[in-house]
Length: 201
Length: 343
Image (cartoon, rainbow over all chains, first blue to last red; front, side, top):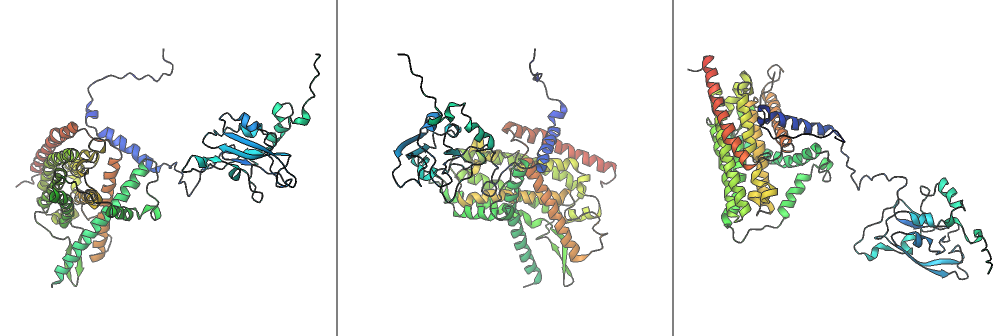
């Protein structure tokens, strides 16, 4: 029994006269190549025209600031935990007096590094983040001459206050709604946590 | 000096420049046609539509490092590409590019020289081209070059036989070896393709083989012989080999147009009501149109057909084309005898 009905039985036989003449086959081939003259080329002439990205494209990360210009990230480490490639490392620090305009909450990431060579751009960090701090954008990661340059620190990741990066494509209404849903553990903050039951002993 | 000498000198320079220019743009055309046939874009960076690409390629060729293998026969190594280029350029001398220009009441032919054995001259010069390849390939002192040269020379010699016999049948019909007379006859009567369809088929196949074009590009097949006879060549010497191939292609297109497709004549040319120099120039335009169509066919075939195997090539040359050419001579003779044209 055949599964696909595409079996073609091949036999070794003498060529017919028409085949021996080659010309019918040659003309057929030439007709095929000629027909390609009228076909559209799929080429995208890269520096001049750029390929359109899909709306869900996941590229280089950004660490967002809030409306006042303070960093949203509190160095909770959920993104690093969520990261399947273990590309994210961070170090936390406590906010000092007078730094309120720099960091939104009492704790912040003094070092935040993403190894772009390890990152698989899955977007789980963005999903895990309870503070809406990290997002993947439609920017591509630039190539570099050394591996070291591919470890992006805060200087490359944090958006500049004057030139915020548009993440509306990733942070749609449905995403925001999902983030408010306290049913999911990763959306709960300290305030939402239920007090621990006292054990009997 | 006489005006006729100046005229000839100018004509020489023009023919030389035009065949070089066309050959240069054929390299661009080849790449563009290859691209279009394969749904690609092709060269488009240098100038509009990449039209300055031949210039860039030429500059590149000149700027490349010149390498002469230390174990090579140095003078022959240099002579090879020069010879190939020379023979390629010499063939343009007997081709009539138009009926004639009238200047101060005298009509000058648009042909460098009207040899009464023009066809023989063509065959002779073309078969001399093989020496360029042979010398170059042998002098390189490299097995790939030698094999390539061997293949090239045996291929060119084999296919010259069938080509010569195809031309004999044509000469039987026309009764002359002068290309100018052949062109004029086709003005009065029909184009020779009507009388010699089989002869034309043999001729065009042989022309492909003579110019080392696909599907007969065995002498330079990259997959087996690195670069064939020009493996050891670099810089403009390599450029000469590649360039001469394009000139050969241009000339054989011109010869095919002259011999079988009416030369510079075009249908209803005398009913248009233009005469003299304007008609002659229009004829030249049409002639170049025919040449460009043939060049397109050359390239079209190259980007369609795969390469022949060596034994297939020899079989085709000696066992198919040669008997066919001889049969063509017989058939032509019998038909002419029946129509009472033999005397």
